[in-house]
Image (cartoon, rainbow, N blue to C red; front, top):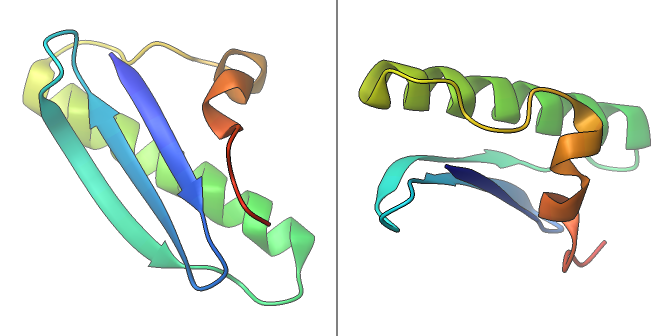
Length: 79
């Protein structure tokens, strides 16, 4: 499974895709303004929510149990 994050100026979107390219969970939340720590916290909360939702649907842990495993998922974002 993979988690993707799209960090935009007005919203942060997240998605979980399984090995068959099927969407297992998705959610969007507003992007905090002018607060880097709040942005990181929002991404962390979104990742936790998506992982929990995917676990509930699929019944297995999503790959990427720590931040270093998720770094490749945070590329191609416009900040």
